[in-house]
Image (cartoon, rainbow, N blue to C red; front, side, top):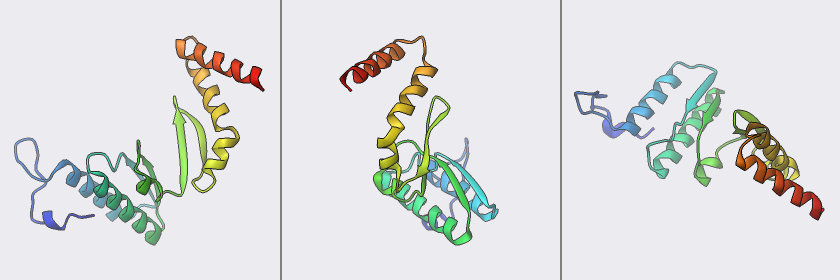
Length: 147
């Protein structure tokens, strides 16, 4: 997890300088991995570090998960393409609704075959009275006329 250079550094706190925010996040992940749970939930494990560090963190997590047979569920906003390529499954949410869940390998095909319709449906239902809803409905009606 690229923490060997900080092995003798205290974690730190409000009144004492210590590890950086990214290092603290990686220490937290390591502690959870040491628990040997079969299911690991990670909320934004790559926020904070630069894209190179994010990739190495996720690559290490994936490697450990495969070796130890751990299921990892991670919420990551805007992963780099290198980090995204490490994923096996994808769950896309919009307004708390699942608009896509499936394998990464079939995501493009699945998305082309109905993701847009489902995403629009969820958005329209979530924002029924908003301006964006009216714009989306108008856009959908225009598409229907062109078909």
